[in-house]
Image (cartoon, rainbow, N blue to C red):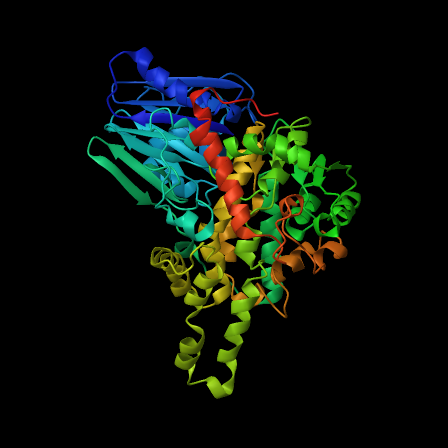
Length: 566
């Protein structure tokens, strides 16, 4: 895991200045790679990287070059199949080390950007090709690794985190970020910083003197396959696939692994298969609603590991909230507080975590999915066989209903928000015959992105690499090829996935019906529940937004080097 930054365009001729631009960007994300740093620049481009050494702890030249130094590459992430790729061309190239980054350099020589179709991993990659005089920047298919860019005065800048761009693209709040208005999160190309954009999952940019070309190289809907409609066969297939996805992410590390237990089936299955050296969970002394310790302890006992319990307080939240916002870059859910306090303790033990992001989106895990799934049962009534048009007229189409359900706008009737939501939901609902996969795909490209953002930023705050086995492209392909009846069945969410989990995880965890989200009790601490609801969303939203404004626009912390977490 690392951080990358660079630019394309003509800066003043002095090499030291060009490199200093890249190094200034890297200093703001030094927490992502405290082990090494390198920058390089030529007359029209510069690239650099801060390195976190997880597999190979030897010193490397940064950036990474091919034999004739016509290709320079920097990389953030992990390529799990890099040894298999290297074996295909190892006799045609000279290798200076055993890193996956050097494998990427020669993979680019062999296949160009077509190499992306062959990768199993999480990544943000930047390649400068001196022969083509082009810069390519790419992001993995799920969006595990972040990548941002901005253009100013004829220069395109890119970096792993927004804060790296701010010395050269002065911050200005972007009121037209529709994703934030609709979802209270940034999950699309537009960000809350005007002029700063995100490379999307499964996308790369081709940058040249002629401009910027965006290329989508991978979409979920283009990778569906035919699966047998047989429960026993599918259960065996999914079991083998899940185990392999975990195993390939727990083989290449010079550090022991840690896992964060939430008390739910996803993190529990991961722990029961991987049996990591360290287990951590968080609990709060504010009532049973925020206490899942019993279930986490049951998993720890089941695999024979000590459970490290973190018990944060409101005083901890007040002490850390500004730091958390600095690392997040955006106003975000305060679930990130849970991750921050856990990872602060993990960092005392190791540098690698494995976590369970993605299962709810892939396999139908959110309780809100019951609503549309239940609605669809009316189409099965014999009496309504010829009246589907009336059902849709009465309820609205499934896409319209889901758009209303996920609309978190302060003014949900804002026509800009409604049009934006329509653009988010229409494609997935037109692609899938079933509503559960359609809802899951909407969430894959929207709400899941903020979960991955939090996981990346909070782990990187403490220089920890996070691996998410359930976002393996093979598992994504399997899940979105699966008929809806295997996702929610007889009122049970993640039905097939839980059948697999039942082979490894204690029954008390798999069969529990009271699972909550990975919550922190901000609403209790700040008495946001006066309305009788779980919390006052407008107050919560304002609180998070004000913290963001304070860090990036009042204190302007990007004007000083990035602080060390902890």
